[in-house]
Image (cartoon, rainbow, N blue to C red; front, top):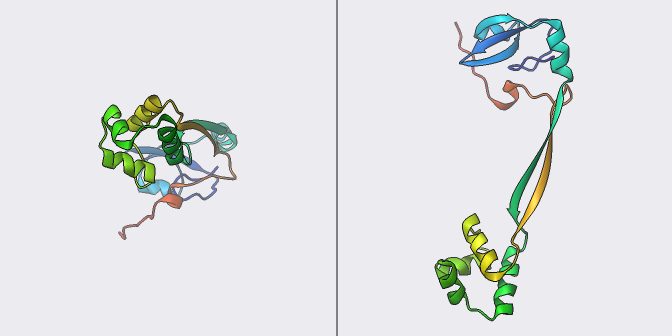
Length: 150
C-alpha cells in the first residue's frame, strides 16, 4: 500500500481528513491533517490488489471530415451559400469548416450530416487501467507541495 499524498510505502497507514478530503496517508503525512483512524491490515491488502478497467466510448469527428463535406457538396451540385442557408449557418463559417480552419460545433456537424446525408462522426473506444501497485500515482506526483515552516 502507498501513501496517497507522498506515494511512499509504509507499515502503518491512517485515514486522515486533509483540507476537507479523506485520504489514506502514511504516519509522516498524517500529521498534516486530522487522523480519523488507523487502516487495518485486511483493508490494506484489498486496496493494493484492486484494479479496475474503465472503457470510455467517445464520439469524435472523423479525420478528413472537410473532404467528406466538400465531396458531398460536389455530388449534390450545391453551393456553399445554398447549404449555409439550409442549415442556418453563415457562408463564411461554412467555408472555414470546409477549408479546415474551423472545427464545427457538434450541432453544426449534425446539421451537415442530415443535410448532406453523410456520416461525420465515429465512435472511439479508450480503455484505462486504474489501481494496482505498478501504476499507482500519489497526490504529490500531480501537485507541487509547499510545506510551511513552523
